[in-house]
Image (cartoon, rainbow, N blue to C red; front, side):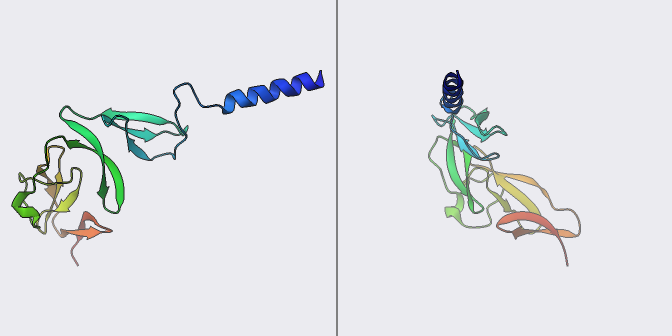
Length: 145
């Protein structure tokens, strides 16, 4: 009887340790990735399983892109990317950009972002008494000194 109980416990432990039917792999809580195929973005939940954040809009697909020292998934335009003004700094809202989701200063007093259609959009103006500056590669409105 003692050996039967031990065998049952071993079998139960093996079944619990086996991969789930949907073959999800363990992941690190809070990390993101593109779905397979690249039609959306997933996040690792508190149970260490991948969970769909959302599907990419029509005409876009998920792509891992560098962003401020990290590689993150973004839904990007499926059309060829076009650089506005030969990619020179100082582009204005409405112009083409190459990295959806990338934020940058728009002049000294505002912040803009590259949207999923590869067009710069103004996020907002910095409050009075502040200006746009980069902290660890990310634009913030910081107090004037």
